[in-house]
Amino acid sequence: MIEELRNSFIEDSAKLDAYYNELDKEIKSKEDLNIFLTYDKAYVDSQLESLKAKKEAGEKPGKLYGIPLTVKDNISVKDVRMTCGSKMLENYIGIYDATVIERLKAEDCVIVGKVNMDEFAMGSTGETSYYGPTLNPLDKSLVPGGSSSGSAASIAADLAVISLGTDTGGSTRQPASFCNVVGYMPSYGSISRNGVVSMANTLDEVGILARSVEDVIDVFNIVNGYDRKDMTTIQDKLTVSKDAYDYKGKKVAFVDIEKYTRDQKVIEEYGEILEELRKLGADLEEVDFKYLIYANQIYNVIVSSEVSSNMSRFDGIRYGYQTDDYENTREMFVKTRTDGFGEEVKRRIAIGTYYLSSETDKEIYEQGLRLRRLLADEFKALFEKYDLFATPTSTKAPGKIDTDIKDPLAVFDSGLFNVIVNLSGLCAISLPYKEGISTSLQLIGNRRADDNLLRAALEFERR
Image 1: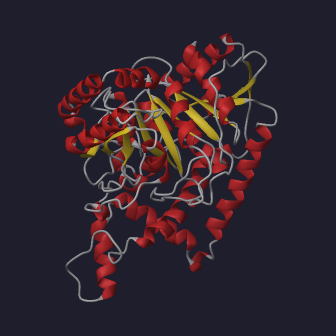
Image 2: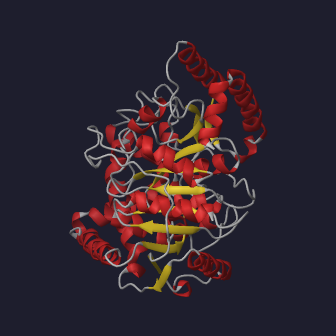
């Protein structure tokens, strides 16, 4: 879609204006979905005028000329509000562009606005935002998934062609599945996180959402690669081709899904998806794991501990919300953080602080790290034998609004097959299987095997 739309905009500037005038109407007509936290038509129009001026001056149009982009509200865009879905940053204005934004702007994209998210990316339903829940465009009674709820919903509602999310334990792939769009999380360190608000440093990744794998590839080829401002980035840039992928002779691992879910729809549709892979020529083999069943517990320990550390910077002094009602510094800290953070954020800070406390001698945290290594080694061994690992993106269908939010453990659960990817530094993509609310296929690839994974996903989509 990107190439076709870009070419039409380059050919006729009137089409560019008409497209965004219509998009403005669409955004206003879908305000009830609560997708945008910041949308300003004047800001969009200023970008359009700059693009047209560049073209009239004879400059070569970028690869994303005029393409509408939405941005999760924990990624910094200069001079645009960035709230992270929290009261704590309600009036914070970004002072610079994240590296990923710089690279997209350089290719002439149009940033439509900043979209809703679970507060500080903590949540899996899209309901923990201080600004209210995002609704699922496919069914407003259902959650859109989280934490990149607004990103997935903006694609599903046709309010953007591409969207940036973040993924710490499925936060791009799970909402993509619930909203039936494509959601991709690259290998750890592939995309710079400079300018992205950290939740859990050893797990966080920037994710890409779109209607098609081809659009994801186009964006990934622009944004991936080394960034001197982010020491976790891998130095060499990867260019993914769109060459045909032959499943014949490829070994694809799968699991006995009934060991991991009781959702009959997921069980049935996962079976149908595996049959489609067989028809493509894949050699499917069932595998079992020793440490997979501990993935959610490992994730809980690691992410909560890193959240506790990262959230300490929000103290009411350097930036963000500060209470007016205090008599001393200690009281200011306590009241600022009590009022500024939502329940889910405070819960994770408390849990993580306990895991890291001297009272427990960090025993739980250190055990979590040991188990993480064992799990990662298990997947390293898996990819010595198999080309891909096929799972359902989520082991359950999207629930009703106001259901899981009442259950602290449910809000923490991003999905067993999601968190293993982040814990092991792998790459993964969620692919729609059929129209409407349905089970999505998640293909998982080895670290730095993004080219193999994306080409396989593109072939599955084409067929």
